[in-house]
Length: 117
Image (cartoon, rainbow, N blue to C red):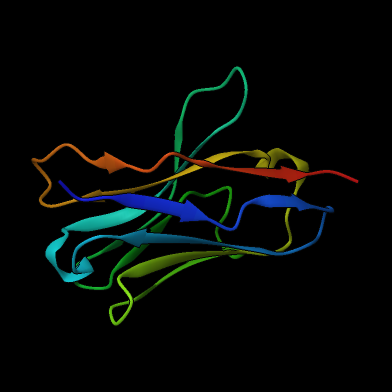
C-alpha cells in the first residue's frame, strides 16, 4: 500500500506564492499519473494539475499560467508551485497517485491553503 504525504500548505496574501510537496513511499515511475485536487468549503473536489508517467502535464483552466506541477524522481516527490494566488485558490489540497488509469487513486491527508489579505 503506497503512502502519500502532502506538506507545504499555509497562508499567503493575494498575489503571493506557495509550494506544495507530495512524497510517496514508492518510485513515482510506477505511477500512471500523479496530481493535485482541491476542495473548498461547500464545493466539490476539483482537479488542479496532474503529471503522467511520460511527463505530460495537465492543468485546470483556472490555474493555467499560475501553477506549475513538477516531479523529482530521485526523491519520489511531486510539487505544485503556485504563484499569483487568488482568494478563490483557498482550499484543502490533496495529492494522489494512481498506478494505472483503471486503478483507484490513493489520496494523501490534505493540506490547507488560505489566500487572504
